[in-house]
Length: 281
Image (cartoon, rainbow, N blue to C red; front, side, top):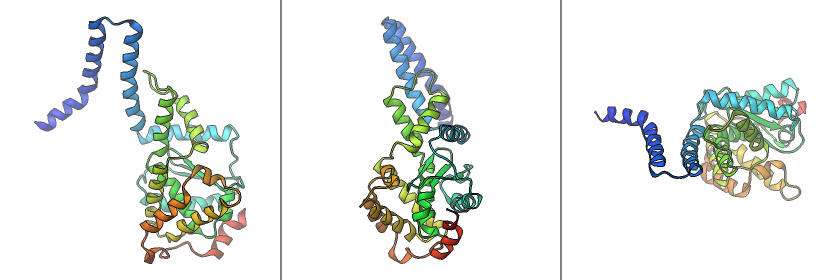
C-alpha cells in the first residue's frame, strides 16, 4: 500500500502542482504579466531538475556536439600522432572500468598545445595537452591527470556548472534549455571556467581512488602536483589557472593515501615513459 502511494505520488505530483498554480493565478485575477512570471518560475524549477538528471544517452549526445564545436571553432588543434593518442587512450581505458561511471563511451584526445593543461567535458570527453605530457616523468603522473579528469565527468561537475551558469544568465525558460544553448555553455565551460574548490578536492579524492584501483602508484598524483607548484614559482601554467589550490590539494592527498601505499603500483618507470610517450612529442 505504501509503495502504491509513492508510485501515485511520483507520477501525479507535478501535474497537481501545475493545476494548483494555474488555478491560483486565475482565481485571484492577477495581471497577465504577473501570471506569466509565476508560471515561468514554476517551469524554471522543473528544468533545473531535468538538466541535472539528464540520461547518459542525452549527455553523450550533447557532449559529442560540444566536442565538434570546440574543434570547429579552432579553440584547439587535436594531435594527429596515432601512437601518442593510442598511448593516452590506453591509460584512459585502464582507468574507466573501475570508475564511478564505467558505461560511458569515453574519448581521450591529445591536444597539440605546448601549455600545461588538461580538461574534460561532460559525456566522457577528456583532453590532454602535449605540453602536459612533456613535463610528466612517468606514466603514473600522466595517469593521475587522466584519472582526475575522469572524476570530474563521473561527478557531473560540468553539468552542475552549466546549471549554475544558466541560472545566473537567465537562460532557463518555460520551454527549457535549447540544445544549442547547452552546447555553447559546454564550450565555454570546457576550457574557460575553473571548477570550485569543492569540485577539485572531490575530483582528487575520486581520482586517486581510481588510480589505485587501476593498479597505478598513487605517488604519481602527488609528484605531478608538486611539479605544478614549482612551475607556479615562475610563470603559472594553464593547468593551475583551471585547477586552483594546488598546495592544499597536495596536503589532502598526503592525508588520504597511506605512506606505505604511495609507491605501490605501476607506472613509475621513467625510461619506459620516455620510450612510449615523450619520443612522440
